[in-house]
Image (tube, rainbow, N blue to C red):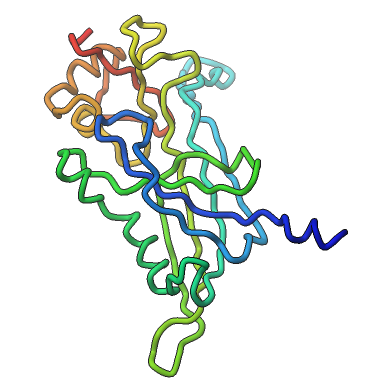
Length: 234
């Protein structure tokens, strides 16, 4: 391989985006980027599907399962932060920036839609691992320090979970049932929290339940697509 090819090595990075102020699925502006000095040696990508099987006591065989939704992608990686990056930011500064992705951004609090920044892992044209996500878990292990006690190296175990969005073929601006805006249920969601985040008030949960025909609105399965009513409640 020529020296020119080595010079063109693509470096991975973590892009940070401001969460949408309108509760949608499209992020606002990119607010920061953490370039990775060393590309990950390994990426673990998990994707699943949710199925429900209803038991029938009189049936001699198991019932046919019902597909209830697509589960979000989960990406796990281990990255090494060593010394200052190309922007002069220390290891501690970069770890602190990642920690901030587990707390609501100030602008989102001011907009009454608290949400941490969203993240996208970017590595050239590696598309299957590049999606908008939230930081589900960060574990930083500091392994080298200066005589003054400043961290000089950190091994970070990062887990990203896909945000999700409208199903294929949907148009968020359309009010027709076939192109209605939707929300992918994640762990910890309730109809009240979805109504608060997407419709501006928890009291709208009844409209969401009626629209989706939810007989038990207290049980939401992660990965399920929940349709959202339009501005007129339809």
